[in-house]
Length: 294
Image (cartoon, rainbow, N blue to C red):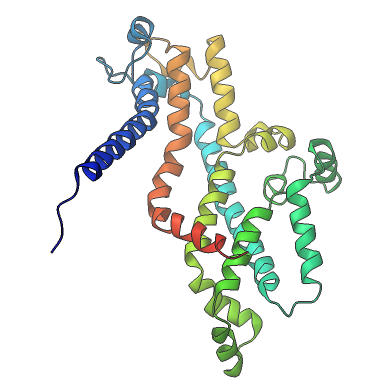
């Protein structure tokens, strides 16, 4: 028979639920404010400043940022960089993490030390730029894909995950005549989908938000990812000149700078937010499973 909960437990639960509810509210309010502000009119933003629900619905800010014909092209560039870059990251990370998880690998510890060294010390922006330039990658998409092909932190966590897999699985596969690549493709990777999905999300978000490297390495505006283009849109909106003015009729009201910034945030974050729910169920499981064993 389950005993009735004590008065102290009920108070404790009430306080916990209240605090968690407040934290959730504090987290969600900025998102509501950004989305609402992007649909607000110039007059309402100037009068109220902070709004959660606009009284007058307006698409002027979105008409403003989509008035440039290059935005959809930049969106396609970002999708290409995100998909191809994530595939490169996952393939290279798995191919390096699996051998490092094998205890019979020669020079395993020195290689791991070199990997950890890169987490503590880096060459810096200028040496990295010189390397990219010397390889002829300037103004190439490869300059955004190859320099960060492997994350040392993700590599170590994935290696730890591979080490937790039972040795008997590999031994049984070897008895059946499976090679090391076959074991990796047919046994290790299918059993490692939680951690692979988790790091795919990490890598994808990083590529989607690519900005600084694109500013450094991409001079051709036709190859700009969406983040760089949206920065230009915000800068031009502050100066009051963007897009094809002929696309607007005489009743078009120039959207305020703040509203354009909010619309830019919505446009740049919405696609990756749509992807997240499909990988969310793997998120916590993948990180925890890979971080238990060092």
